[in-house]
Image 1 (cartoon, one colour):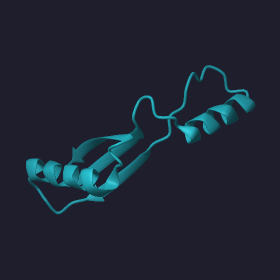
Image 2: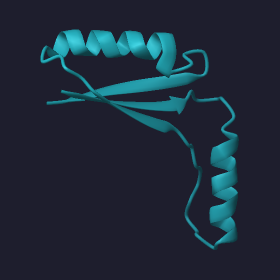
Image 3: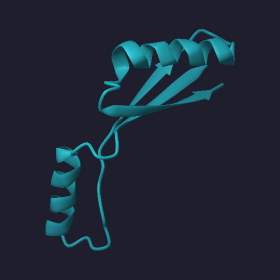
Length: 80
């Protein structure tokens, strides 16, 4: 089983990377981009075949290491 964890800054937290990318896109004349938020994706290959147990374990990983839950949100997608 594979776990895909998408991590992004919480709403209201300044995203300086997103601002820099947005500015660069404007400089390159790409129009129609209202805002840019930059996040990260972590892909974990798991040995577990139990979806409930896998989700619980990946949640614990996110809460203790993978995400800074003070300023970041995360979403977990499990793929068999």
